[in-house]
Length: 142
Image (cartoon, rainbow, N blue to C red; front, side, top):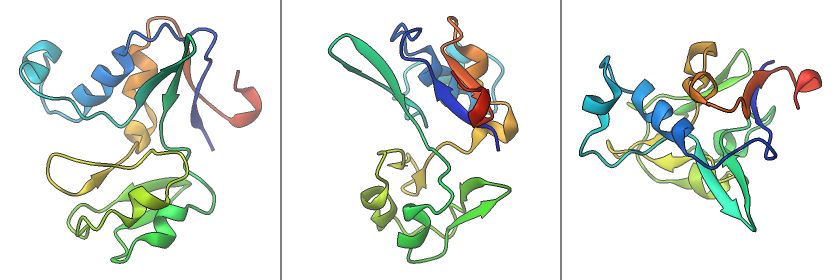
């Protein structure tokens, strides 16, 4: 299964992936208008430590702890992609607490959110100006 990988050597820490991710969640055609004046809550987050930038995003684990922790069954797996049914989420945040990668977060609506791979065309990958983020099978990943 394809997953998102980040080459920390190439990541500039520009955070454009965060903006493309947040923009992908809107139904608008113009990023500036869609995000102007909004606090963005992307499904990928850039962290920086000791001059190294790296992305925190869902790893789409084979046996996800977030799914096991979900008390309502709002988290499911289909074709290796972990998704959240926002209508079922009661915002108990046990999935946030159980994710070892910190990839699940609260959304503006109160339900939780995480990367769901943008229907196999991740906006963060397409928007990365340096090619630091790739969508690939594990064997081919950088």
